[in-house]
Image (spheres, helix red, strand yellow):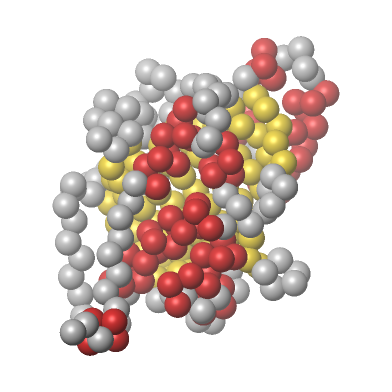
Length: 236
């Protein structure tokens, strides 16, 4: 059964930078257990922490702009940490099953020049087969709606990972200009029509991308129960 072993949340409500459990670059940390209880005083961010997962699920279902307004969130400016101009970030470290290689999902959400939220960067990473340590390599990498996806069980070459996000366009040009390369047959250059939708929402529906599809289904399977005091008081 798939489970989250760790996550990091940045600039979401009161959670300016919170990490729980294990991440790909924190291998000595203990992973989250199947049941995790969060305890703390009022106002420290317990509700924000769980709503962050609800927000991510809404982003997948509705798109980031609608998710910012859903469930009374009040828009991007209300959910971004006060006094912060940096984008909202989520890092999810999970395993599809006990024997699977861990996968890291990273998403950065910002506002464009018109003030509308959009997906600035989206990335899925995994270690190569037979490798149990070291940094993972991308098999989905989008920057402002355009990027590369690696088909099947393929991941990026090491030289690709050394490319900064701002230089992703150069990597795309290299792949387009060198179709004879073996890796080019495993890669696909994509550009989303709507930058407010998640890449995993579109690619997760294609059988050519089983890992993305599995992760999408994992998020779609989340169930979050929201307790609204006013609604409870209105019950007969």
